[in-house]
Amino acid sequence: DAGVTQSPTHLIKTRGQQVTLRCSPKSGHDTVSWYQQALGQGPQFIFQYYEEEERQRGNFPDRFSGHQFPNYSSELNVNALLLGDSALYLCASSFVGRNEQYFGPGTRLTVT
Amino acid sequence: QKEVEQNSGPLSVPEGAIASLNCTYSDRGSQSFFWYRQYSGKSPELIMFIYSNGDKEDGRFTAQLNKASQYVSLLIRDSQPSDSATYLCAVSKNFGNEKLTFGTGTRLTIIP
View 1 (cartoon, each protein chain N blue to C red):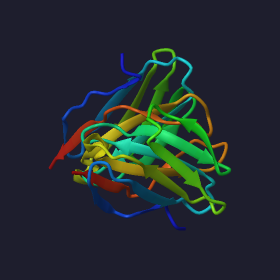
View 2: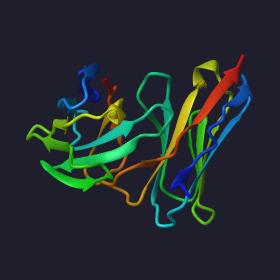
View 3: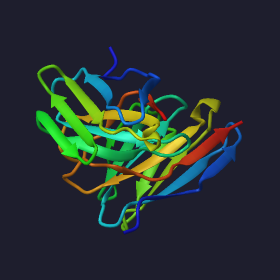
């Protein structure tokens, strides 16, 4: 049973650039949520996708956008990167109607 | 007041003893409660979830929920060095398709 996968593992970008992170949900799951985790903090909710639509959004600017594909995989895009965007980006998957969310290994983004 | 509060620790417990981790939340309408374990440099791993008042046991782990006091706890019996990690408490308002709000985590160290 394949778990949640994310790519890439690590990424280094320069301020002002754009980045795309990818996530494939756990087998059988159809809902994908994205979280940002700064060092020493708990994960912060960015947004959630179900049926290829953004269903909920946290307190993040429009520079953060996403997409969900028909196979339930998802992308997180961040434009105009800031130093403060440096964090671990986590994707979590779940099954509709259930709230147990399972995290992927994360993408460590460093903005210089 | 933070939505989800945890003592950041570190909490040191002798091997074989019971580790007790606590979490309080501010939204009285919260319905779902989760405990995640996060090893240093890794992503959070779901270890327990609880939806009803009372205790829920799974192996060496027991989650306890008291909605009247807005309090949820995690007990780890027969603590092992491999239990040394940061434990994150998460809360959501519904039973499905809802964002998770995390505390900052409690760092637990099991002393051999």
